[in-house]
Length: 394
Image (tube, helix red, strand yellow):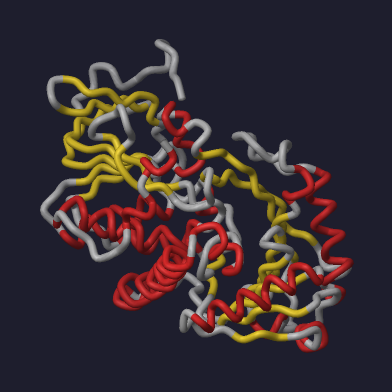
């Protein structure tokens, strides 16, 4: 991120002073501000380059899923038995915290539903992995159910070999969720929208943040910009990769679809759900255009949008001919090993990063921001934050 001399309006402004500055106004930034505010004792300034939720938070499909982007069989292979179990448990904690400690006590109307999910297989190979995932999840005392090809008739879909049902999962309107959080933050939290940060530097024992229309002095700065963080930290280049995801919305139908479940299929490369108002969201198809979907450009592409339409024809026949009302994309942050990153950025004292969710920000952000807030203000947390240390990637 950079700004020209002509456009820099931060010079000469009286700096806003805060103990902690959060850069990024999506689910990570707002949840972190929430937990810091709940614990108390610090002032917080949150800066967002657009409107709150204008990044990945407001551009995803609102899935609340346990686990990572990979099925549990692959998680066990990649991370080992105990670490995979800890990660999976943490995402269940994330969902419970989201509802029990934020939505419920504050009566946030954000379309929350614990409707359950189905991870559906489009090939026999994928179904075999779900069979193994089911066995391993049961071995680790996680609740799930295996379903066979009869799901096609029950859910009025086509071409699936079966799936894994997880009743603990759900969905949400992420924009209404963060707007709800904003509405009950205390006056210890200042929020500045439409203000892009372009420089963070240490001067005279404190951090100075220069932004498009503001200057902030703070003791600690936390990058909560997910896939955009490499623009502010060279350390994160190659460790967090900006990756575009594309979505479309179909006009509302009076018919209740998919037995109310969110559906995650084809190794997570396609996903769809019906909202309470009858609108259906469908996203994915990135696997066929991996190179083209890297970077910060957030326009949609004909190839992927056509692929999503073909997916409807092949797998959701009841929606063939349904009007497409919206097409959009958003930039996610993919980490090198599929797990989020949390901690101080090496070589940049006082600057931290939290992000790199690899498409599952809603599944991690609430619990990881709580863990980080506890670590910062209480000196400890019961959550296994060390799993997500930046230092694991060098």
